[in-house]
Length: 227
Image 1: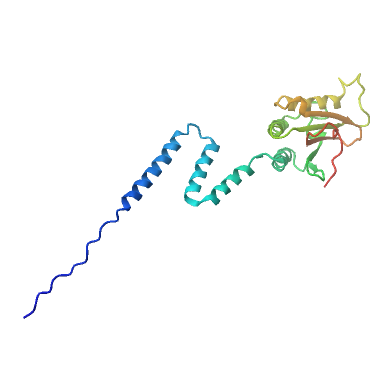
Image 2 (image 1 turned 180 degrees about the vertical axis):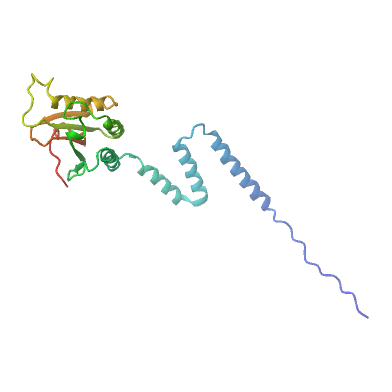
């Protein structure tokens, strides 16, 4: 006769009492996060970075927060000298292919050499209409750069064999050409204090545009030393 053995079932597992607390904590954490995001009335980058930094600190530790702070510190000058030179070169080289450009040894002065015939019609003081975009874009970039650090431009034109006298400057073609170039920049918003002009008589048939950081007024019309 077989004896019925008592059933030995597995002991009932009590549910983990900590699980609901974890879910509730995560819920309120997310809720607080979205309420904070909603409270930002304007999409200001600095505020967004602060929120991101807080999340990094909470979930990734102090090191990640420090890295985020370093990135924001290093991105102060968004339109530095290298970017300025690259953008202004693109404008001139797109408008006038095979244009000559030179940078001095220090790297803080950029000069373009442009044949006068590429800017004016048939030896006159009338600018070619195809150069309008050149002056618009160059002015925009110069104004933007001047907002970062004072940057000036020199326009030096070769008047040929002989410089005009004060009495015939109002009728001299080279003097009128310089005036037309200056007005092209001023009419596009470049302040007069950022533009300097000059004339020389070397017979090159060129106009020289030089861009440099204003440290003094002693560099005007000095030739750029090629690097």
